[in-house]
Each structure stands twice: as C-alpha cells, then as structure tokens.
Image 1 (spheres, rainbow, N blue to C red):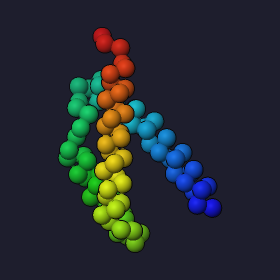
Image 2: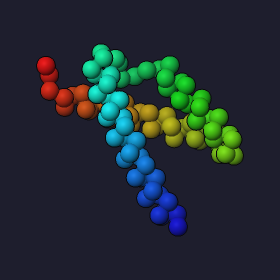
Image 3: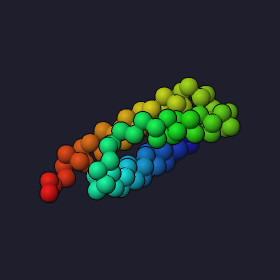
Image 4: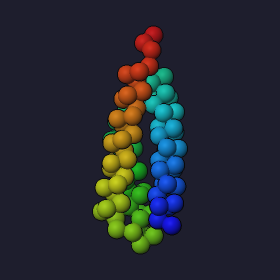
Length: 86
C-alpha cells in the first residue's frame, strides 16, 4: 500500500514539474526572474497552514516544500538554458 502511494506521489511530482515548465515559459516570455522570493514565502506559509490543519509536522513539511521549490528553480534554469536564443 505504501509503495503504491509513493508511486502516486511520484506521478504528482511529475505533473508538478510539467506545470513548472509552463511557468518557466511564461517567466521567460515576460522577462521575469526564476526565483521569486515573495511568491516562495507565500507558498511556504500556505503549505505550513495546510500541514497544520492536517495534523502534519509543519517544519518537516516546510523542508519538503523548500526542496520542491529548489527542484523547481533548478528545472526552470535547465529549461531556460536549453531554450533557443532569439
């Protein structure tokens, strides 16, 4: 059961990275920076609130989402580096 749930989580992470690619394209088209500290602070606060509501350990969930944000920034940087220069 845990293995199946972990596989579901991996599929969700793949979906998240696909959305990150869309965000990267938007940011590139509009000349926006990859790292948006204000947005990341808001995301982390929202996830802490949701974690608390679900009875999850806030600090550990925040650490997971900090890592997800780091992976997202890295992925966006890779996509930008691979994009053809106009």
